[in-house]
Length: 432
Image (cartoon, rainbow, N blue to C red; front, side):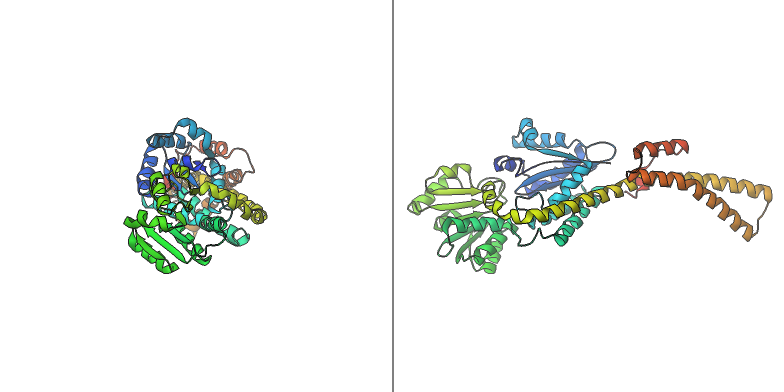
C-alpha cells in the first residue's frame, strides 16, 4: 500500500503561481474523478488560499501523482519546470506526517489557525461524496482529524486564535491607525469574509459595506455585523466610497482591474484607497498597483504581519510535533497489521481444511463417535492448529512492528512454506 502527496504552498510558491494551480470548487468533483482514472485507487485534493495538494493511494505501487498534475496543469498554462521547482512530494510515512501537520495547522501561514481543519474536512466530504475516498484513505483522513483535535487539546498552539481574516483586519488597522470614521467594503460572503467582517466590527469599523454575488448572503452577513448590504451590480459604483476594500471571493478571474482603480481615484479625488486581497486566485489584478493612490496587499503580503504572532507558539508547536510523530508510528503500525490479515486468514483456512480432512479420515476408521468423543477430537485438533499458527502469526506481527527484518519478505516466505494461495487483499481486509 503506497501513499503519495504532491503539493505547493505559501512557503514554496508565490500567490501568482498558486492561483494557477488552484482548482475552482465547481471543478473539484471532475478533477477527483480524473485523478482516479489516471493512476490512483483513492484520491484527495485540498485547495485553499495557501496550498494546493494532491494525495493518492494505490496498492503495490506508488501512484503517478506528478504525471496527473502535469496533465492537469497543461490546461492552466503551468510548465513542468515550474512544477518541479515549486512543489514538494512526500511518500508513505512522510505523506502521513505532512497530512497530520496540515490538519493540525503546523504547516499554515499562521501557526495554530483554526480554519485549516475545517477546510480539510470539507475537502474530505467532497472526495468521499464522489467515491474518491473509500477505505484506507478514509482511515488516514479521519485519523488526521483526531490528531488535530489531540494537538489542539494537549497543547496551547490554538490559544489566542489568529486567522488570515484577523491578520487582514490588523493590517487595515495599521494602515490607518484606527478604523473609526473609515468606510470598509467587504466583497464576498464566504467563511473567510464572515470572519473578517466580524473582526472589522469588533475593531471599530462602523461604516461597513458587504457585497456578494448572492444578495441574500450579503444581507445575512450585514445584519449579523451591523453593516449595509449592497447588490453586486452596484459594486463598481459604490466601491469608490470605501477607504479599504477587503476581498475574498471564489472568482476564477480578477474582479478589480486597473481601469476600475483609475475610475475610483477620479471619484475619490485621489484620496488613497487600500485593497486587502485574501483570495486565491486573486480578486485584484496585479496591474492595480500601478495606479497612483491605490495600494494593494495580497495574501503573501500578510506574512510580515503574521510573523509577530508566531514566536509565542513555537514552543507549543514542538509539543505538537512530538504528538504527530507518535501518531504517525501508531497509524503505520495499524496499516502494517492490516497487511498481515490476508495471510493470517489464508493460513487459518488452509490448516482448517487439513484438520477437517484428517478428522474425516479418523471417523471413517473408528466409526461413529459419541458426543464426548466428538468434542475431544475437535478440541485436540483445534489445539494443534492453534499451536501451529502461533509462531508464524507472532513472527509476522513482530515484523510489521519493526522488530524483525523486512515484513514483506517474511510474509511471502510463510505463504510459500504453507503453500497458501494468492492473496485477495480486498476480500480479506473487508473492502468492497
